[in-house]
Image 1: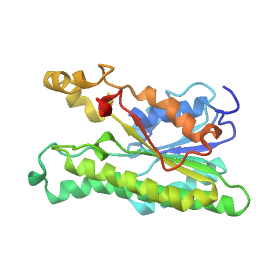
Image 2 (image 1 turned 90 degrees about the horizontal axis):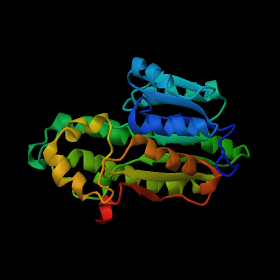
Image 3 (image 1 turned 120 degrees about the horizontal axis):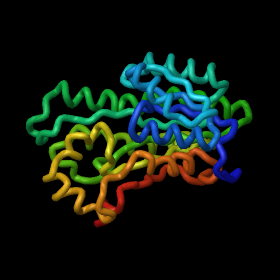
Image 4 (image 1 turned 45 degrees about the vertical axis):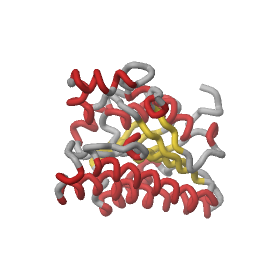
Amino acid sequence: MTSLFSLEGKKALVTGGGSGIGLAMARALAEAGAEITIWGRNAERLEAARATFADGATVHTDAVDVADPDAVRRGVAAAVERMGGLHTVVANAGTGGAIKPVHEVDDDEHRRVLATNVDGVMWTVRETSKVMVERAKAGEPGGSIIAIASLAAIEGAGRNSSYGASKGAVLALSNAAAVDLARYGIRVNTILPGWIATDMTDDMQDSEAFEKHVISRVPVRRWGRPEEFGGAAVYLASDASTYQTGSQLVIDGGYAIF
């Protein structure tokens, strides 16, 4: 690991870090030298996730529901106190929506998706950026916030309107935060995953029709894997990306351009 990509001495928080893309990113950040706190709603799953880190990694877990602003506030304070600071945040926690056309979406389902996918990112970015801004005012600027959106933010996500709306909001929120926080040396970038084999896509992975009509259109001709996001997380967290902010990194096997 060269010094350009080293995260030695850095402190990182990953929401939704108990599985999938969040866990893969957290492991990559730890391998690059960062001390990690992972959040999720299920304490047992978080403990199981912690056991998958490489020997020598410093990993903490907290059960936090990002849809609850008070829980996020308490969680950030606990993570900062425990780790002694905060340099990188991956706002990854998210939930899927009911697969139905827009005219059949019900009120509670729509609000449930937005509570986690939009409000949760807002509370996470708000509370963690406060810590970074105060550090900058004290003479130590810098920091990286990485928000996980989706291709659904930029494509017509038919039968998935609430989810698509939530991820479009993540893009807009991230861009606004990038402008607000740049003067403090804090970078805010967004990653847009394509079709990735995670718990959220289990049903689709078992569908022959989905494989035939969707995955066959991915130029690399397969599902993406969570571990293929680790390098992007390390890059955006490291000094290799100090002039990159307000950008959207698409990781989709070429699906969006085909």
